[in-house]
Image (cartoon, rainbow, N blue to C red; front, side, top):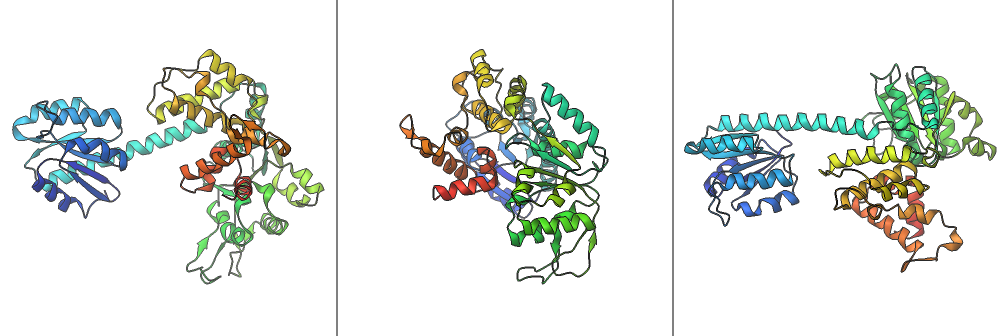
Length: 453
């Protein structure tokens, strides 16, 4: 239980002190509280795994069995939190009722410490196991390839055709079309699906990080190399390596990458001995590589190496009624995530979705549906609940039009505020902020520099 955070709520200070002393060496954090009326406030400000809740309190809420009242409040607001009830010997019947109302278990005081610890351990283990299964299921739901349009059926056919081969594949498509999802599907349907799947956003790696991240290094290779580190190529051995944003790497990086692919061997920094690698390479970019090659920005010999087969991911505007299928798919996912029960989209909302061109593609649709689920107060989503990314709206306007007024704000101001809001929401995590905004990290950095953020 080393990672567990436990909240103990009881109006007996001696009991609280004893439990805190008992649990402190065994768990991550123990929070104690005498007044149950502070319970929901504590849960809103802290990540809690387990609650130990007394059955009776001398509080303003006098129901005769306050523990059941507060149990109901916890399960209503935080249904995922496991609650263990604390009861006196003569109130076991109430404890049994608590199990029917959602409690995970109960203990009778005075208890034996070993029994208390065993109860906490088994309840926490159930929580962790359920969480893992839920996360796996949620990941599968979010990453499922959804679509019945002709272009998606062609894409699915091509994936099934090339996935079992060892061919290097180049995935092309606009930002937000789901190139990462295609890469995962290729790995999942390949003969290497039992091996690792390793993704690297190579476009975000600086010249100095490129080699150390991809090829690894030996202790002492440079100032901060305090121990050996295995590179991503070695980590992906016997599996799949996915290099995203490959169109953004420099000619020097391209030469290093070409050498590794030709020799099937990496040379860690600080080592004179090569390491053999066995990987299947997938790459992706939103930049037409042939156009780059014609401008001498991308090596043609590397293009031939990385795209034995080329897969073009269609933009959402070419997928017809897939917009509605995807919207409903995301609605189901975010209903579960945010514990909502929104039944569907109103007719005007569907019309709004179908008439929009989605410059941010599937990523923008996902963002719009998630926001609608969070903000909607009705049983269905209306057109007023659906807002599209201000970043995409601004990016479509020619720079000469940047000062055109939108309401009382210019598009430039809207874009700056949207960027600041996303960065603040993810506590400065540029990758997450860029994903929400439907941008690459490089594009977000350019806009941050433009607005001096």
